[in-house]
Amino acid sequence: MQSLLALSRGIDAITEKLGRALCWLLLAAVVISTVNAITRKAFNLSSNAYLEAQWYLFAVTFMLGAGYVFLHDQHVRIDVLSSKLKRTTQIKIDVAGIVFFLLPLCVFVVWTSLPSVMTAIQTKEVSASPGGLIRWPLYMLVPVGFSLLAIQSVSELFKRVAFLTGHGPDPHAKPEKTEEEKLVEELQHELGMEADQNSGTPQAKASGSATIPTRNTP
Image (cartoon, rainbow, N blue to C red; front, top):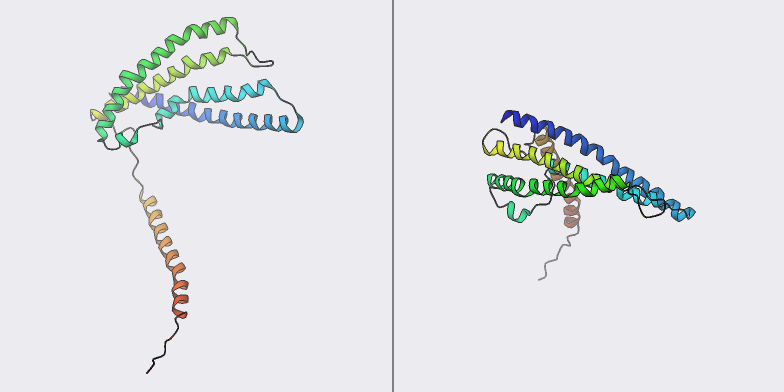
């Protein structure tokens, strides 16, 4: 099991580096979109290549970043149901989902997409829009992206099995706060209490000074 966990750590490291690198593609997409909008509005100039480059970059980030999202456990979950279950039950559901649904889906998509990829490469498919970009690299994103997701799924499976068998920690347990973090929170709480008291003191004084004395009548 320790050798499988070592393999899992290696996969996680590669996925982490790839995910961080893909973040720059989002910045590039924003820059291209901004420049394209400015040139179109200010100079009445536009380019289909720039327009397609935006969603090309988004497609690369989406397809190749699925494993990175899985690594950080940020995929959509039905928290209303899963939050009521024990942690071991949640892990068992994850294992069943990976083995019986996610991995077969990845294999199916990769296998069925290969013919389309080979056809696009052989024909050197390009965009039908004037001045558009080549299309065949986008076809390659499908098998490559799902292959990366499958590899990361195997890593997540190893970590969850290790947790269930007592050979590893909870793969997504929230880390305990350090003593320094606890001290900072206590100081922030005390400062907040002092600020509330100071803000309430002038009001108390103002309400006290605004009291009108009454005169006793015979």
